[in-house]
Image (cartoon, rainbow, N blue to C red; front, side):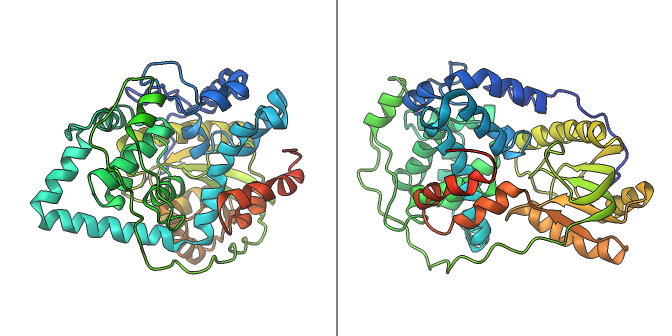
Length: 419
């Protein structure tokens, strides 16, 4: 793949997205500013309501920007605290911290991601063998089940690349317990269509609904709950009356957070990627950035979906432009993460190392691991820089979310945040 410069920083709107997601940091900051007045009491009281596409939203719709770190969790939480105080912003802050918790939990237990991939592939093999299963999955994905609400969400997801969080829970519950379809195929359906598709949040949320994440505890969608929180738009009939927990072999104990790479020094090429397009706030140790690349993906099939891919490609261009402005160096968009292109860009810039934001468990982390060997053979060490936010909070995700949440205030005091 060529690392030749491509147009960078052009605002691109994901086709048909509702709400519209313009893949730039400037658009992300505008959305954050517009939402902040509602990040306190209004959010706490109304966040579960889903009025549908095009309607006024009770949630922030910041997830694509946080997902690819056009915004950071720290700056979003800091803005909410500054506007509403710790008590007023608590519900919103807690929701943002769920994202950090999921990433930390999966980082400490990578087998959950490996297991999802294996179950997804097994489900695909089962569909190839069973016409009945294949037809049932197709009907669910295309919104042809006859279930009020569910069919609408399936079409909304495919058309817009986005669903309200509550709708995601209802959809997953109906998929697993009413339609009795493999949970991993549902999680895969989301990954293939969500603009904010994320290995940690998506996989662990589906596992939670299924009763795998918190053994013995499932989430059952009910007609009353759906009708109430969709303001009467939907009232499905025939939903499962029971939600028996799925079972699996134990994942094993949490591992320790992997040790960070040695701090980089000297001239370096900055390699950004879809896990972190935030050059403004990434501190590359003692390195001096002399060139930058913004990679559009970790592999040929990641991002999995077209909506996410369009967003990522535009966000990479924006990140390259911002890196160029911050570091005063050449910056380009890289299609994929091929070692030949990275080596060529590094040598052209006079870099003695390649610095990349640390990527949590998932395809991008796998791609960086695969890249490290060829770079080393080419005389360039790959240094993965973990943000202080992740360094402080990920190790706390050893148990459930609420023990994690209780430990956050002490950890974030070092970040200058008072929860």
